[in-house]
Each structure stands twice: as structure tokens, then as C-alpha cells.
Length: 373
Image (cartoon, rainbow, N blue to C red):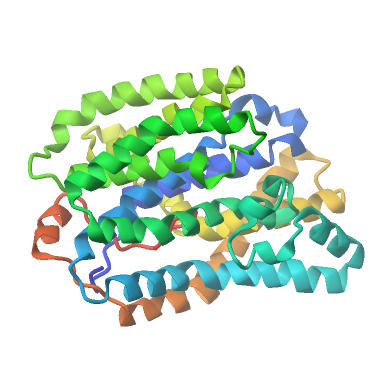
């Protein structure tokens, strides 16, 4: 984790694509006249894109800094500085401010997110019966729990395994995940928010991080293959979802998302790179963590006050409100804490510097997703 901060615009653009897809997917039913459901019914893939990007970035950071004496302390400190300030501010708002101002809504919040104490512990995806049906921003926080649980373990695996062993672990988990989901589906386990059922994307990202650090890696050699995986993976994901094949659907989705990340970084196509360096989509990615956690609030307020009746007017205004709240969060809450990361810097190994010539900017804050360092 170098002290020099270099943002890669394509990575922010990936976050931007992911968060816009997620927002429009989550709110598609609120505006039936716009027929968003037909376009964004599979917008949940944006979460998989976050998972892949998270696995790619964080695995890369861990591999590069594993010889560092501050490996564990610095990673956890930086992770907390990225995730905790906004996350716990949202919990404070939902569990203290809203119940105080609107007791009726407060009762519903506690009822739909019981046990409430699962959220501060990042256990909501395990202990809350239906975490995606919780109120407001609590309904999207399950993905944060997935990541926090995963990195508690993955950090140690990366530390004590060689790159070849990590590669074998990643491939094994990706291959075994469909079988595990098929098995768990017989026991009424919620596959969508279960950590063990969502490892495909994180492992695909990890495998990509390991691949670009290989001595034999040559970016142009895999561009055509990445296009094939992307163009095959997306329709396969749509088909699996349409037929209700939850046990397999996350596998082609993860593969397609990993291919998209690869193409965003290494494809030479001018039109693609222009699209991924567009200032709007890059800025959207920059504030994507705030957009992810806060976007439910303006839409829920509009729904409760019936201000969403005129869809063509309401949707852009509500999106503007989402951007405004995320921008405030980024500038007044997130960035001050991110500056404290300079006290928790682990220097990359000499070998890692070579890989950074291929992929730079692995030290940048992202969302959750959360998907941040």
C-alpha cells in the first residue's frame, strides 16, 4: 500500500457502472410506467461486479504487501477507515434518529431487521432472516457483511499461502460453489446473501489479481478470450435467472464481471477506453460507496410522501438527490478518514513494483461495495 496515491479512472468507471446498475435495479418497481424492470431486472449483477473488483484489488494489495511487518494491522486499520465511518453513521441514523423522529417507521425498521445488533457486527446476512427486505439502506448492507466475513479469513490465507496455492484455492472455490449452492438450496438457505454462496465473484477477482502478477502475463493475449467470456457469460446469466437456477446463476455472472474488469483495464479499443474515462461515470465511481449505502433514503422518502407520482420528473430529481448526499458523504465524512490511511502504510515488495507497472492504483478507496480498502 504505497503512500503515493494514483487513481485509475477505469477502476472508478467500473464502480460507476456497477452502482448505477444496482440503483436502477433496486428502484425499478417504483416507476412501472418507465418499464425499468425489463431493462434492469438483472441489475443485481452490479453487486457481482463490485465483488469481482473487490477481490481483484484487495487480493492484489495483500499479495503485494504480505512480506510487510505491518501486514495485518495496516490492512484492518485501513479497511475500518474506509468502511466504518459511513456505515456506522447510517446505522445511527436508522436505529436512533429515525425512531426518534418517526416512531412508527422506527418500529418497522426494528421489525424488519431483527436482530438489530447483527448489523453492527456485520452478521446481518447470517442472522437476519431476509436481509434484503430490511428497511432503506439496511437492505443493501448484506454485501458489506459478505466482504467483511470473507476478508477476515482471506487475509490469513494470502499471508501463509504461495501464489500457486492461492491460485488453486481460487479455482477450487469457483468450481465447488455451484455444487455447494445446489446442496444448500435443499435446506432453504438464502443463497443470494449467504457468504459461502457468493464467493464466485470474490475468487474470480482474486484469480485475476494473481494472473496479472504472473511473470508470463501478457495483457493483449487474453483480450479476445475476455470478450468471448463476457459475451457468453451475460446471456447465460440471464437465462439461468429466468429459469430460476439460483445454484448456477452466480458462476457465469462472476465470469462475465471478471472479463469486464479485464477489458476495462487492458482492452486497446478506443471507444471502450473513452467510455470508461468519461468524467461522469468516473465521478460516479468515486462516490459509489456513498451512493450504494444512501441511495435508498431519497427514494423511500419520495415514496412515503408520494412525491414519486410523476416518474419522468421524479426519477432524475431523486437520482440528483442521491448524488448530492453521496457527494456530501464523500467530502465531509469519508475523505477526512481516508487521509488517516497515511499512518497505516505497508510498502509493497520489490516484486510487487513490477506488477504495478501493469496494474497501478490498487491502493484506491472503492465502495463495497464496498469494495474498498
